[in-house]
Image (cartoon, rainbow, N blue to C red):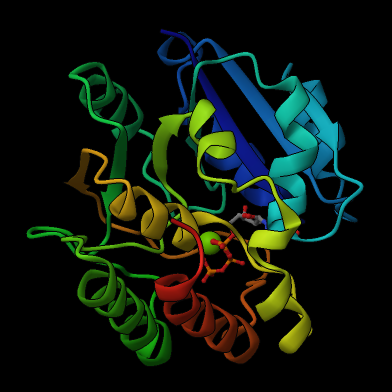
Length: 234
Ligand SMILES: Nc1nc2c(ncn2[C@@H]2O[C@H](COP(=O)(O)OP(=O)(O)OP(=O)(O)O)[C@@H](O)[C@H]2O)c(=O)[nH]1
Ligand SMILES: [Mg+2]
């Protein structure tokens, strides 16, 4: 079993310099940076540090994942945010759990013992609301269905149709935005009754850079998606 640490970046020069050196290269088999044409030199810094860099052409964070897909060598993808929100030391913990045989491991900000220092009142409320709705409507027991920091087999992307634009196009067109695939991954993993485990992991505050979150548009699109999934996709 091989692991690719997939690191999406959009103007994360500060985190690239301060967070990524804390990621020990022997923890994973590949570290792949997918950069959304950062203007602060993130991609050049990453290359200087010796990482493989993919320059994203398709917009949005899901576009970044899709553009990175052909370059992902690992059987397992571990998505990691280099903006300070993901604690590097949890990478081996996460991989150890996957090796126990789980289909997905989520580093949960809201599991017992964990805390988000990045949330404001709106994101704290939103993340808990979305997670609660996913649990209620799709029979899951997540404590954090939204977070990026998680590990899952690359094969799931195809199995759960996460790689199809049609899985998102209704809500993306309706709310004129591009959304990521973590919430849909959580929903469809629950629908397939996959074995998912949470490990508690604090979310430290962002270091450098700027927040890209589109609170209203993404909130609306994700809520729509959660309900739409009751009727669409087996
Ligand atoms: N390549 C690429 N990376 C992105 C894009 N949007 C966000 N990211 C990166 O994805 C990572 C996770 O972003 P998020 O944590 O979801 O968003 P954020 O802007 O950090 O917002 P907060 O965590 O709420 O502060 C960060 O490293 C971002 O720089 C994108 O369109 N393309
Ligand atoms: Mg972040």
